[in-house]
Length: 231
Image (cartoon, rainbow, N blue to C red):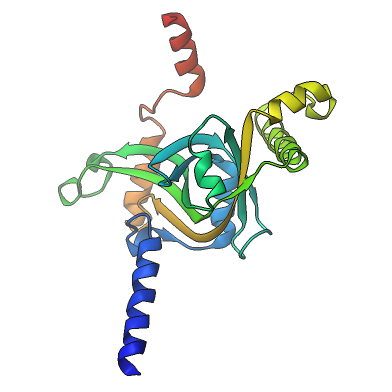
C-alpha cells in the first residue's frame, strides 16, 4: 500500500513538473490572477505553441474570457484552415500560449554598485497552458470574430468606423470558410515579471531614470515605414 501511494505521488509530482514551461525564480514569479489577466488583456498578440503532430508556432491575436473554463479563464482565437496546426485543435492536444510584454536591456551602470551586477534584460511574460478545443461551427466562429474585431477596433483605432456586423453575409461566409477557431481552457498560468523588483530602492530609481533616456527598439510605425521603402 505504501509503495503504491509513493508511486502515485511520484507520478503526480512528475506531471506537475511537466506543466512548467518556463524557469521562474521565486522573486520574479507573479501569481495574482487579476494581475495576470490584466496583462493578458493588454498584450493579446501571442505565440500559440503546439507539438501535435509536430512543433508549430503561430503568432496571432487572442481573446481572454476571464470567467470561462477552469477558474483561470479561457483563451479564444483562430488560425488559417490551411495551417497544419489546426490538427492539434481537433486532437484536443495540449498547447502553451505565450503573452509577451515590453522588454529592454539593463546596464549595470544604472545601479549604485555596477561591479556587483551583470548586464541583464528586463521583461514580462505570461504562459497559459491547457488543452485545445476546435471551433468550426459557423455561428460560433462568427461570434468569435465579432468579439475579436470589437476588442481590437476599440483598443487600437482612434475613431473606429469598421463595422463587422454590417459586412455582407456572403463575404462573412467566405471569411469563415478559411479559418478554424479554438478555445483553450487554462489549466496552468505562469507569470514571469523580471523587472528588477528585488533590487534596492536606489537601484530601482536608477533603472527608471535611465530607461527614460534609453535607446529602445523601433515601434511598429517606424519598422513598417522602413520596410515599405525597401519594397
